[in-house]
Length: 125
Image 1 (tube, rainbow, N blue to C red):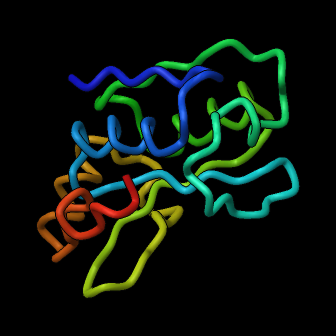
Image 2 (image 1 turned 30 degrees about the vertical axis):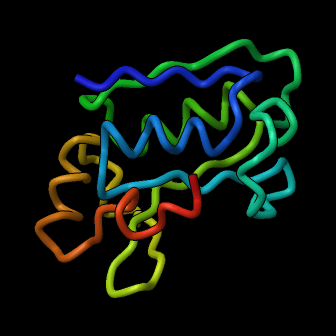
Protein backbone atom coordinates (compact mmCIF):
# COMPACT_ATOMS: atom_id res chain seq x y z
CA UNK A 1 0.00 0.00 0.00
CA UNK A 2 1.02 3.57 -0.54
CA UNK A 3 2.66 5.28 2.40
CA UNK A 4 2.93 9.04 2.03
CA UNK A 5 4.25 11.33 4.72
CA UNK A 6 3.42 15.03 4.99
CA UNK A 7 6.22 17.05 6.56
CA UNK A 8 6.79 20.79 6.76
CA UNK A 9 9.98 20.82 4.72
CA UNK A 10 8.47 19.16 1.62
CA UNK A 11 7.28 21.37 -1.20
CA UNK A 12 3.62 20.99 -2.19
CA UNK A 13 4.60 19.87 -5.69
CA UNK A 14 6.85 17.16 -4.19
CA UNK A 15 4.00 15.94 -2.01
CA UNK A 16 1.66 15.90 -5.00
CA UNK A 17 4.23 14.15 -7.22
CA UNK A 18 4.65 11.45 -4.56
CA UNK A 19 0.84 11.26 -4.18
CA UNK A 20 0.34 10.91 -7.95
CA UNK A 21 2.88 8.11 -8.24
CA UNK A 22 0.81 6.16 -5.68
CA UNK A 23 -2.63 7.36 -6.86
CA UNK A 24 -2.15 8.34 -10.53
CA UNK A 25 -5.71 9.54 -11.09
CA UNK A 26 -5.89 11.77 -7.99
CA UNK A 27 -4.12 14.88 -6.75
CA UNK A 28 -4.31 17.07 -3.66
CA UNK A 29 -5.81 20.52 -3.40
CA UNK A 30 -4.16 22.42 -0.55
CA UNK A 31 -5.86 25.26 1.33
CA UNK A 32 -4.79 27.77 3.95
CA UNK A 33 -6.53 28.09 7.33
CA UNK A 34 -9.10 30.48 5.82
CA UNK A 35 -10.06 27.96 3.14
CA UNK A 36 -8.33 29.80 0.28
CA UNK A 37 -6.90 27.42 -2.30
CA UNK A 38 -3.13 27.29 -2.62
CA UNK A 39 -2.25 27.49 -6.31
CA UNK A 40 1.51 27.89 -5.84
CA UNK A 41 2.92 24.40 -5.35
CA UNK A 42 6.53 25.60 -5.15
CA UNK A 43 6.16 26.57 -1.47
CA UNK A 44 6.94 24.35 1.50
CA UNK A 45 4.09 22.54 3.21
CA UNK A 46 4.85 24.40 6.45
CA UNK A 47 3.91 27.73 4.84
CA UNK A 48 0.31 26.78 4.03
CA UNK A 49 -0.71 24.83 7.09
CA UNK A 50 -2.25 26.70 10.01
CA UNK A 51 -0.63 24.67 12.79
CA UNK A 52 3.03 25.54 12.50
CA UNK A 53 4.06 23.18 15.31
CA UNK A 54 2.58 20.10 13.63
CA UNK A 55 5.19 17.52 12.78
CA UNK A 56 3.89 15.06 10.19
CA UNK A 57 1.03 12.87 9.02
CA UNK A 58 1.23 9.62 7.09
CA UNK A 59 -1.41 7.92 5.01
CA UNK A 60 -1.86 4.67 3.13
CA UNK A 61 -4.13 3.55 0.32
CA UNK A 62 -6.47 1.72 2.68
CA UNK A 63 -7.41 4.89 4.60
CA UNK A 64 -10.88 6.24 3.79
CA UNK A 65 -11.12 9.55 1.93
CA UNK A 66 -13.14 11.21 4.70
CA UNK A 67 -10.79 9.92 7.38
CA UNK A 68 -7.75 11.25 5.52
CA UNK A 69 -9.28 14.70 4.99
CA UNK A 70 -10.36 14.90 8.65
CA UNK A 71 -6.98 13.74 9.98
CA UNK A 72 -5.17 16.21 7.75
CA UNK A 73 -7.32 19.11 8.97
CA UNK A 74 -6.90 18.05 12.61
CA UNK A 75 -3.13 17.68 12.22
CA UNK A 76 -2.42 20.84 10.25
CA UNK A 77 -5.40 23.14 10.90
CA UNK A 78 -6.25 23.66 7.25
CA UNK A 79 -8.44 21.70 4.85
CA UNK A 80 -7.32 19.53 1.96
CA UNK A 81 -9.32 18.10 -0.93
CA UNK A 82 -8.69 15.06 -3.06
CA UNK A 83 -9.23 15.97 -6.70
CA UNK A 84 -9.10 14.45 -10.16
CA UNK A 85 -8.97 15.66 -13.77
CA UNK A 86 -11.57 14.57 -16.32
CA UNK A 87 -12.03 15.95 -19.84
CA UNK A 88 -9.62 18.78 -19.05
CA UNK A 89 -11.58 19.94 -16.00
CA UNK A 90 -10.67 19.63 -12.33
CA UNK A 91 -13.13 17.96 -9.96
CA UNK A 92 -13.09 17.39 -6.21
CA UNK A 93 -14.16 14.28 -4.38
CA UNK A 94 -17.69 14.49 -3.03
CA UNK A 95 -19.16 13.45 0.32
CA UNK A 96 -20.37 10.26 -1.36
CA UNK A 97 -16.70 9.29 -1.81
CA UNK A 98 -15.83 9.69 1.88
CA UNK A 99 -16.36 6.00 2.68
CA UNK A 100 -14.16 4.82 -0.20
CA UNK A 101 -10.53 4.07 0.51
CA UNK A 102 -7.98 6.23 -1.27
CA UNK A 103 -7.06 3.26 -3.47
CA UNK A 104 -10.73 2.64 -4.28
CA UNK A 105 -11.29 6.31 -5.18
CA UNK A 106 -8.27 6.14 -7.48
CA UNK A 107 -9.79 3.05 -9.20
CA UNK A 108 -13.20 4.77 -9.38
CA UNK A 109 -11.65 7.86 -11.00
CA UNK A 110 -9.80 5.73 -13.57
CA UNK A 111 -12.93 3.72 -14.39
CA UNK A 112 -14.96 6.91 -14.78
CA UNK A 113 -12.70 8.61 -17.32
CA UNK A 114 -10.28 10.58 -15.15
CA UNK A 115 -6.87 11.37 -16.58
CA UNK A 116 -3.51 10.28 -15.25
CA UNK A 117 -2.48 13.51 -13.51
CA UNK A 118 1.29 13.23 -14.07
CA UNK A 119 0.73 12.63 -17.80
CA UNK A 120 -1.97 15.28 -18.20
CA UNK A 121 -0.30 18.07 -16.23
CA UNK A 122 3.47 17.50 -16.04
CA UNK A 123 3.91 21.28 -15.70
CA UNK A 124 2.39 21.09 -12.20
CA UNK A 125 5.37 19.12 -10.97
